[in-house]
Image (tube, rainbow, N blue to C red; front, side, top):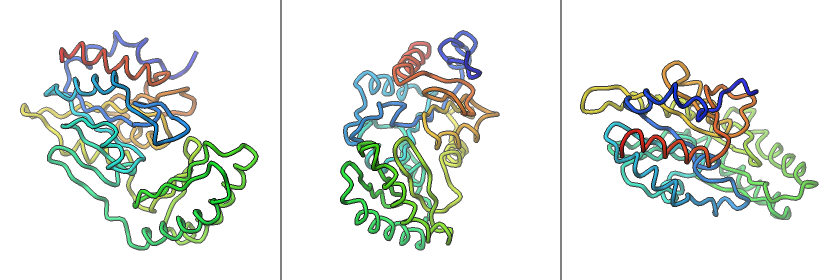
Length: 267
């Protein structure tokens, strides 16, 4: 039995808080609201998931933020619900009702990202299935479609391209689910984004929100850590190594959770 309980199996002990408290839902996109697919451009939000998010966004005592590694414009266009907060590049850029934020990425980091992108585009162009996604503030190297025998060549190319800039502490390299993330070396992550949004959120009654963080990737662990003593944290997938309080098995479970929330909150 998993040491991290399944949230839906613990529903009775959580239902009262989830029904009555002022909630702030923080959600990832890929792997949480939409399935991870071989072509990231085809990661579509289902109509069911969109309807449930829209219902919850209409609740005056529930805020929603979707914070993704995608660019801000990309995640906002894929969800397309007015009245919620969108965060791109793991929170380096944020927009929503009465909210706008851009982390001041140093010029040296932006130049380093440009140089790394040029190097990788040149080096990886012969590797079928490899691609470099430029999101201005970050880069993502995708290798989900690369043949297994060529993945090591992709990893060597990434290592060679980033090495001089890592040593100068201009960028950082993080592994994801069949991707490599190259980001500016700044003291900002999903956890700090969540705290920044919470600090600026109260409702008309002066209540402070109860954060509920749901995500499936290593980047979400920063958010779990940030609110572990003040909110509810939920890992999506097999929960080995997570710091979350609970887990859900897949996006189907996430949809079920959002549906239950909408029902008990009568929206």
